[in-house]
Amino acid sequence: MKDTLRLDRHLSQATGMPRSHALTHIRGGHVTVDGVLVRDTAQHVDPATQEILLNGQPVRPFRHLVLVQHKPPGVVTSTEVGSAQTVMELIPEALRHRELAPVGRLDRDTSGLLILTTDGALNHRLTHPKRHVDKVYIAELARELAPNAEERLARGIILDDGPTLPAKLERLGPLTVRLTLREGRYHQVKRMMAALGSAVLQLHREQVGGLKLPADLALGETRELSQAEIALLVK
Ligand code: URA
Image 1 (cartoon, rainbow, N blue to C red):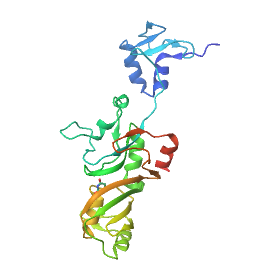
Image 2: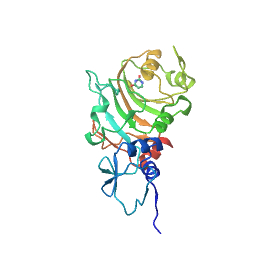
Image 3: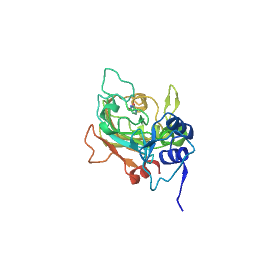
Image 4: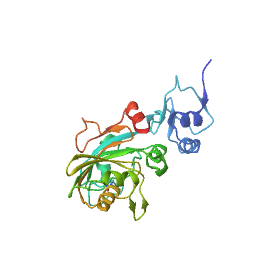
């Protein structure tokens, strides 16, 4: 027996679009079945044997995109077109039509790991203050930190928007530190280091959650994450 279902149901199930959008597409004359324009939303179709096209393209299963970018300094984390180059302009041409949004922000002068995704739930999960997702930065400082900096960061620092959650400091050299934060507030690393008496000369993010900036991702490159990498991000 043929496995048929309503055209609007098929369109919605196959693409992930809401049923109301599927109805609009069908009524608007955007859908053909075996070359014939169909406006009857209740028409039954057999997706296994019939060719169903939306705007002339095969109906493809809907899949969220999760991208990793090695953001260069000088590029702005914004979806708005302005005078400066944005992280959106570094996305491969073929993916730019998707509704991608950066996950959090890196300052213009910060480099390193930036995630961009079409998945609003994932974005929320990675940025929500209560989720406490680790973010690991390497900072080049103008001045060496006092010996009690580790302890002060572990206790939390008072900033003008409230105390910070405990953060971990590792000294990689007299003026180079690795800082692990569990939140992502505006200019947070720079403000925390300023509270400890040093300006930040360079800032680079090397990790979000369990995902490290892939070693083979050149500065300025953006690519899709594998399922295994996405699992690291949210673990
Ligand atoms: N903290 C900062 O100060 N800047 C960034 O870009 C990220 C974290």
